[in-house]
Length: 295
Image 1 (cartoon, rainbow, N blue to C red):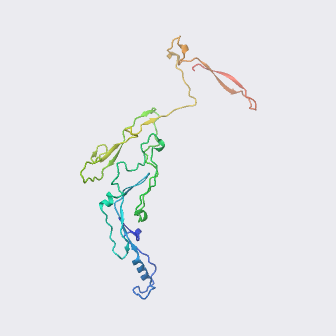
Image 2 (image 1 turned 90 degrees about the vertical axis):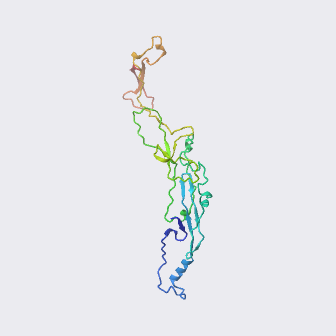
Image 3 (image 1 turned 30 degrees about the vertical axis):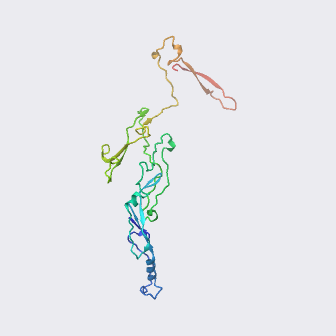
């Protein structure tokens, strides 16, 4: 899988040529120019090919475009199919140090952020958008059965929907716990012996060797979002109940200032008289007095 030949690349190591029907004539005769086999043999001998060597590669297909962490390939010169074909070789510096498709000279924040970007003050733009930058390779032009995975089409969001909040839970701000993200250490290459930039020791919270980080919602917050539960209740027939008179603590001189205990009022209800038929004339009403001593 690391070599791609320009001739019959999709057939891998076992190549089958369908050369058509045989005419059952002498293919070794130089005098007979009409032998199908001899024409086809000569056609194959004149074909040229080359081979491209592919290194270990890692291409991140983020929602903001491709990024090549490591990608290197080198083609050989083209020769006839009957001539020896040497696999090209490259130095470490060519494949890594001086390779523009390698992460040898990346900074700490080189990787694209394809999800929450910290711009909490602008909700419409706090998630990075999509991109179309493609890091192409010979696997795109000569896939030999390998298909490039689909690029993510939307930013990554960690969310939980369809929550059923218990009715007995009061409306208030609920402070969530501290979340974190963990990167497990699977390989540690440090030939210079310098101190490791990231932790490779055992992480007690995750019980693996690696590096963990606290999650934050902004540069000023040390945690992710708290949860606000607001479940308003309303009804068409809601009414205010006045306190009973025995709980009134006002004095006789202060009762005129108002308070919880209010004097009875008269409410009115408009209804049409029985038998009234609507015609293009002003309707008539009768007034009913409805006692309501509590409000």
